[in-house]
Length: 141
Image (cartoon, rainbow, N blue to C red):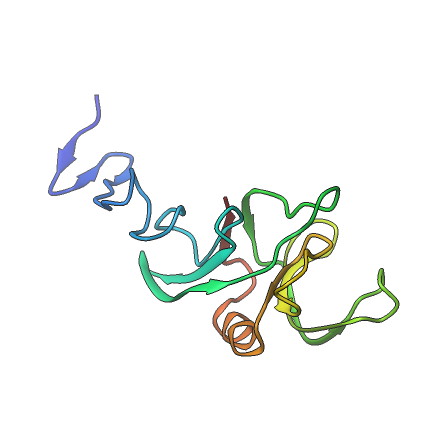
């Protein structure tokens, strides 16, 4: 049996979010996420301490056979002026890598499917690049 005192159990904080058990209001992601992506609605958010600080913003995600992976990840590394090794040096401005296979948030076309990355407008990609740091939690739903 866990001891519950003032919202804290022997196992950690007890969540009080209203969007769903442990989720941040207006998003499908947990309060621990720093970046959240909803593939079905083609939207993303930045989250700080369980509160949305930017979003929802429109995104383009992977197409058939090159789907953006769903799950919980963490920021691995960043490169402001990255070029794709897989796609003939195609520009990936403000790249924030978070999943195996070179999957990243970056600036790009919002009107066509990506090869698995989460593409954003210039301003949003820049904001994601500035806000996220290696180790930050990313959730893709």
